[in-house]
Image 1 (spheres, rainbow, N blue to C red):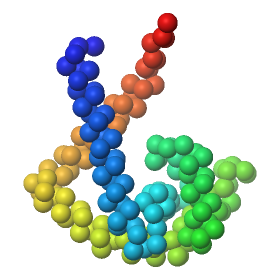
Image 2: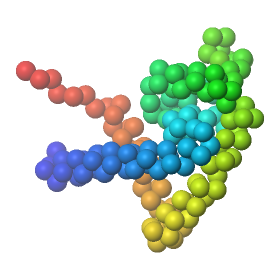
Image 3: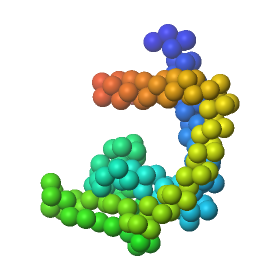
Length: 156
């Protein structure tokens, strides 16, 4: 690995960590009026298209199953989601949003739309925004691909 490659990896990682923090902070602001946290919003958002098992949500979100399980249980207790029978697996129930959960997500929509428009303008338009998404998706895919092949060197 060249020094330039190492520097690029370090700058990419630091940028991603900063971006994650920025997204979490703005997500908390967006979710708060709906009575949600950013984490609750993430988990509910993952099951809006279709119910998923906790392990499936964790895979989509790139976090641990235990973290998702804790949030899923809170959402169920708050009446924002419910567990459903999973025809593909007897023990791994599916998490699905309730009407209250969908209504909470709907309350986020106006702020989400406003933020999306502001970001698109700041980036130079929709085409530039779409390119940003493509680059981030490409980076994520590349990291998935190399992380399955990477083994850390053993320390003496």
